[in-house]
Length: 169
Image 1 (spheres, rainbow, N blue to C red):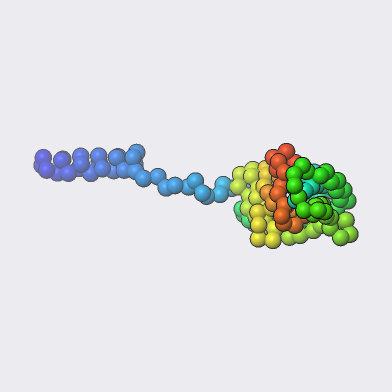
Image 2 (cartoon, rainbow, N blue to C red):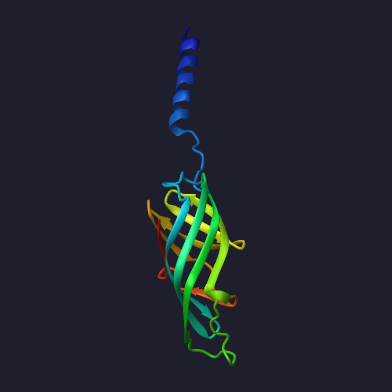
């Protein structure tokens, strides 16, 4: 009888110990359900700087993002239109003449995007690269540029935290 009590007590302790101190799976890389469905058309303004050898290129324009959402996955199209580009020469020794700023033909730049949404965060890729990242609420989205959008290499995004793409739907 003592052996049965001991066995039951040991079994109960093992179950209790496993329940409170068991291994918890690591979900740090998992996505969280989206806070909102982002499907639809988002419109707003874009303002960012790209540094090209010898020049700081400030680009402004109208930005339209048309998204379709399936769970945490996004795909769609973007259009940057009514583009205005200003150029400022950067200090330094560069080839003469400097490469300088360029703009898209027809004053419009468009492309396809795919990406993910997790909680209220969004990342969008274009051309195989992470292009945009940001956050959103019900009807407001704020994106920052991760990679040069208008100018080709060699190019770096200048202070991408400051220059934003602000959209509403």
